[in-house]
Length: 350
Image (cartoon, rainbow, N blue to C red; front, side, top):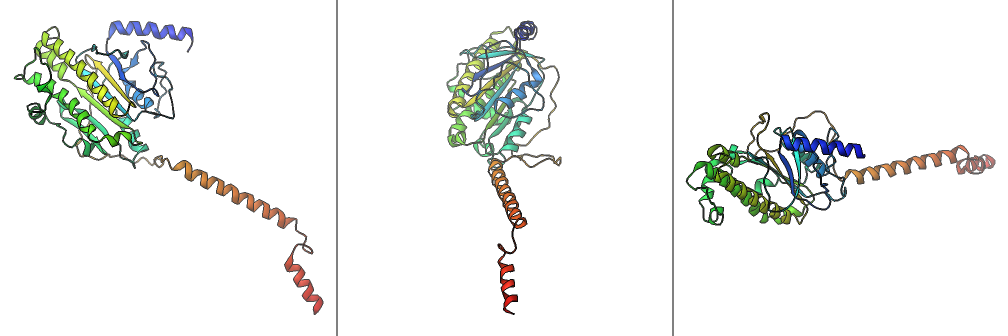
């Protein structure tokens, strides 16, 4: 990109930073995925494409966003974790990360990324978890059904989970938040889900070492409800924002370490979304359903091996046919043909 293009991106970033304030933050990422430092704005509807490109998948429309470099195409991350936080423009994280302003924050989903994973790794059943605790919306596919079988997903389960002996209430400083308020409990239950995901995954560490990439998409709306209940200038909202930032950083570090430093953990913070996202509900045990469009067969990694075997076999047979045909065409019947010589001797004997 030239100097003029860089200046245009910088001016657009400065303008959007003053207008919107919503952010896309990269908390942890491996060396194979390179995010450049800068303030280039990200179109809200292209966030799933950024997740797909960072995992090595192609997208339908080219993304001319300079924040994501090519990286190492032969070593892609084993997992992508994207957490969407509603109700706030920006969280002050304990560790310095890379953040970009979000332009036109619209609702999005990672369904296209999940479909790409299903298509490319259908035989290896990767872990795909999409969860919105406050809406009781959950989608588990592949090995996620067995790994997160005990994960609380309904509001009643989340409430009961909070009052168990090993919940986060025993160690988390609540400050101005209360255990007796439903709004506060909803917020705390989302933090409990983050803790339980990393805890349950730690019991199946072998899944983090397989060849298929995993996908985690979480939507947290508890902080937004805190702001509606107490106001954004209240002490409860400030304490909840700090607690959420600390919990997200801890969750990012745990997931990053579980995947051996080969995971991308991203957070999108948005005050409000421009339009509501209409999605069809899915069962926790629902299998991946796809509509047949008369497309080609899903790609398999044995394709290259089979292709080379068939290719060189056909080339060898073609060369053999050419050589045999050439020799037959230029053959001297009186000298090279044993059939002609045997017939000629038989005529002489007669």
